[in-house]
Amino acid sequence: MDVSADALASFAVFADHLNFTHAAAELHISQPALHVKIRKLAQALGRPLYHRVGRRLVLTADGEAVARFARAHDERMADFLAEFAGTAPRRPVVLAAGQGAYLYLLGDTIRAALADEPTRLRLINCDHRQMLAAVRNGQAHLGVGVLDVLPDDLTAAELASFPQVLLMPDDHRLARQDAVTLPDLAGASLVVPPQHRPHRALLERALRTTGTPWTVAVEAEGWPLITHFVTLGVGLAIVNGCVPAPPGVVARPVTDLPPVTYHVVHQPSARADPRVAALLERMRAPNNPDATAALAP
Image 1 (cartoon, rainbow, N blue to C red):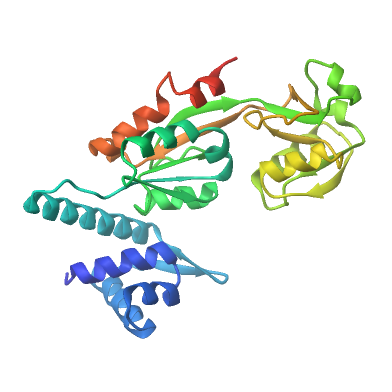
Image 2: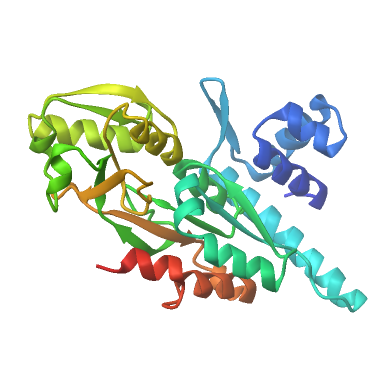
C-alpha cells in the first residue's frame, strides 16, 4: 500500500468537514486536488471511505477508522516533536456534547479543567448522532449524551440519570400533586421539540400508548426556549429533570416515563492517554457538584 502521511492528514481535515469545498479551503488546495488525494487513498486501502446520503457525505466504518488513525498519527507526531524540542505537548483534549449536557451537567467539570489548563480543552457542540460520529472518527476523545442504544464499538459509562418532569405554572391544577402521570395531561397543550428530535418521538409514543389526547402549543428547539414558553403561559412541557424550573414554574416527576440517562463514551483505548483519563475521572468524581446533584434521589 502506498499511503502517505499527507494523504492521511488531508483525509482527517475532510472528515472534520465532510465537505470538499470547506476542507480544500482549510488545506489551501483546490477541490479537484483534494478529490484526487482521497480517491487515491481509498484505492490504496481498497475500500470506500465515504458515501453520499441524500445531499450529505457520510464516512463509512472504514472511513471512520482511517480518520481516527490519521488523527492519532498527528497527535503522536506532535508529541514526538514537542519531546524532541524539550517542550510540553499542548494538544487539547476534545469533548463533544449537546446543549443540555453543557448547560446542566458539565459546567463545573469544564470550569475546573479550564482553570487548571486553559489551552488543553476544546469543546464541540453537537447532537448525539454527531457526538458518536466524532468519537468514532477520532475528532473527539470523549462524548457525552443521552443514548437510546449503547454503542457496542465504544466504551460507555453512566454519568448521571434524571427523571422526566412536567413544567407548569405554579398555579396550575396539577401543581398541587407531588407527581403526575401521562393520563393527567389529557387535553393539555404541550410545548414540544420539533418532530425530528428524539425527545419528541418518545413523548408522542408514550402519549399514544396511554391513549392521552393532547395538542401542540408550539414547537421549540432547546430546553431554554421550551422553558421560556412555559413561563409565558404558552403551554406545559415535559423536560429532563436536570432543567431548572424558573420562578413561577414548578416541576413534577412524570412517573410513567423512564428516567433520562447521560452516558460518557470513548474509544476503548482512550484511557491510555493520561489527559483523557484525568478529564474522565474529574467528570465522574463523586464530589463533582453537577454529577452529585444529578444522581441524588
